[in-house]
Image (cartoon, rainbow, N blue to C red):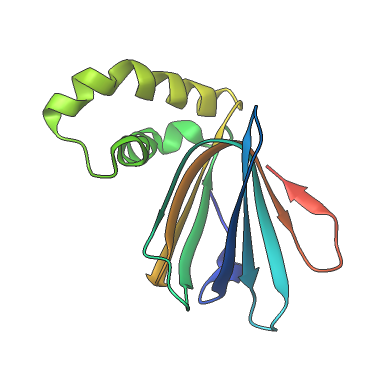
Length: 146
């Protein structure tokens, strides 16, 4: 898991979804402590959840789960995928029904085909998504890719 501490207490000011026939991309704008806008681009998003978007959306954590340290976070990733699929924490009966889907998605993360992005807010928007790639575009710089 990779954390982005530079975005703690920054403000999410925009969420945009771009859809085409073959894929959906999600773009977020996060304004840092100096007032500069950073864009976070998630490409080929397969699952997406955005809850409680408000006029102000103050970030607590930004976490990216990928293949690098996947095996250190498997149970945490599994819970987040269940939540992403259902919009709630799983019950025992859910685990059997969704086992194959969750296993496939976890395998995709473990082998670098997907990444799981989570943004938890102190106030406002909480975001969870599964995508092929996530890039952060900082002001006056080139994209940083996952």
